[in-house]
Amino acid sequence: MLETFNFNNFIFLDTETGGLDPYKDNLLSVGLVSGDGEDTMEFYVKESDNIVNGDEAKSVNNIDIELVKKIGVSPKEAISKIHSFIEICKSKNNDKNPIFVGHNIAFDLAFVRKLYSLAGYNQPRFSHRTIDTHSLIYFQVLQNKLPASSASSGEAFKLFEVHVDKTKRHTALGDAVATRELFFKLVLKTLAENEGNSFTTDNPQQKRKSSALLPISG
Image 1 (cartoon, rainbow, N blue to C red):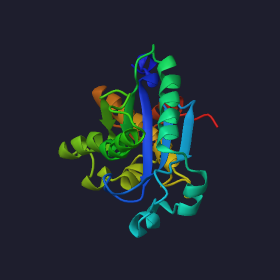
Image 2 (cartoon, one colour):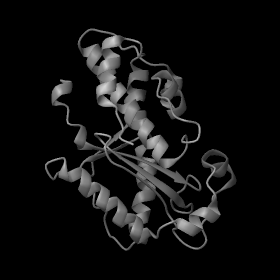
Image 3 (cartoon, rainbow, N blue to C red):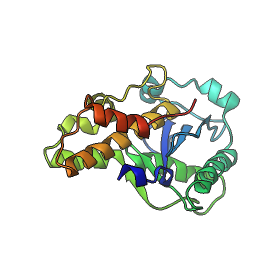
């Protein structure tokens, strides 16, 4: 099964924002990782001259607004970067649009869709299909296969031993890389259970499979 798994059918997305409401809060940074882990991209976004990182958001993302104002790209430039990344991934996926994957992906895409609007696009140029790792986990919670607490990204990373450097946690790229690892470990868990086995992170065979799935080129 793993031998025929199409890694290039996915793009892993994470964003950092100045709040929870895309209608009034700012998108501050975008992180993207190709399904095979060979390509990554991260950039700050300067939606306008009046960008704000709310106190609660800043306590999590620790983003310096002055730095965003200095090096952040415009909405139009941001969309151009996203399009170029999609094209790279499409070239490895028989020219098909990869599926965006994220933890609470609807949240990230709501801010990205607003970015398209700010850039003057009527409709996003990416697949309407998405995969949400939160939903994948919650389905297993409902089946009593995972604890309810594991639905949050932090607890999920702990449970599946996804190690994120403290300096990269709650950065767009750092969390996108971590979500990629989480997703593929969820895939391995499902495959193991389908074969009548339990998934554990210390199982040598599953560790080898995980290592084959997860390398990220520096």
